[in-house]
Length: 255
Length: 358
Image (cartoon, rainbow over all chains, first blue to last red; front, side, top):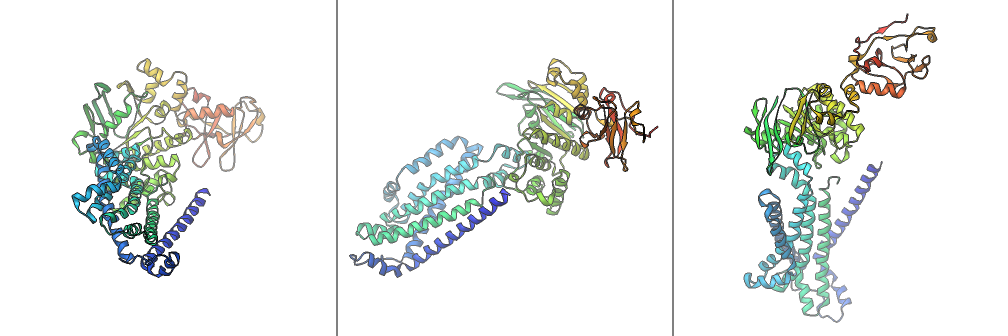
């Protein structure tokens, strides 16, 4: 009885979660495309501002540029991070584990603004230094969770896989990675969410993102710009987080 | 046939398996037993090369195991372990199909084999095929683990304390099932345990190890009646030696003619006798009760014996229900013989029959 009740409860919660996700995603798209329709609202809220709506670029362009920054940097973080995590959990790379873990930890103790300051003289202004800073900053959770996820595979499961005649590669693909996937995805989720927020800083070195109206608002004392940028970044982070939550759930195998 | 020749494993200069030589014929059920740290698991894992051997040779049907590609070798050898090692993200059917899939059998053949094995282990395919390991009881998961080990019809089956983590009741059921599966498939099995009762229940050959050395390799009854030295005697345990011997004897060897009771005059019987119903099933026993020799006792299902039952179990029922004889029944539940105290004392039976009332 309890199993069936559990399952219906889970299904109901999942359905409610899907509905929330769909509504928030709709709101995100609506605000990105139709921020201009809210101009009367911002005018009423901020009667002292001559320009209460950010208009130097469309919010759609800013959103796409922001997503582009996060996507590219996260792809780098994930591929480097998962590869590093895999390497140090194989027999050949086991001795590098402490070094890789501390390097990744150091990467995260640097504030991204400091990384930007170092990257600009080396890589110039704009897109590239931002990608470097974001990729480094997002590396740690991916490496950590890849190592932790592979560590959750029970020794007996691994021994059974070997004893049944799987090769090292087959064990990795068929057994270890699927079982570690939930924890690895949790790491990617943290990394991506951090990067969505941190990408706004890229605008200080000339990378176009949702941080552009935010910075312009802070510099020009225009609270309306700040709200418009922050609202979209926040929504994007929440929608992405909920989507990852769904994805993680797909890889849980009854504890 | 499995041959271990001078098998030795050295860890940091210490010989954990020391010059073990033995031959297990095809179709035998060999049990490696000994106290913890005696090297029994290490010996087992050297057979499928989960642990590389240091010295000596292992031959399976004449092939040196170190001469074969390791994955190919392991796909020829079934392997079942204590914690089942089932893959939690795969359904029962996919778990059972592990090795056939690695061997790239056609799908239809895999499906047939999975159903066949699940039926062999009394797991209804319709009910269990699509379940996941976390939805199974301990006994069911262990059955799936053994079914997986047998899936590709391996020449040899290795089992590393497979029933060590299940409750005693389930363990006995699984042992009975294992005996049945062994009799049916005729596989050569190497089984590791530290439990002498389990060894006696299953083995056709027992290898007792101590400190990495093979102390005695013998058939179970011979080991019981003729232990090689004091260590063996102590390990077997002297206190219930007789009971252990009874666990290797079976009712069909000791069953005797059963006498049917006459219609009348039950109270004047000089010997105990059985009453049967219209179908020939035993319904009551006249006499043979310890506390009241003249009483007529209704036969309870719990104290009926079958020919396959061990004499230990038969004795246990006699003691518990305070009777000196049990009815032996066939598969349909009809009385075919009786088994009593003479059988417990080792007096061989006459095969059993029904004797009509005088």
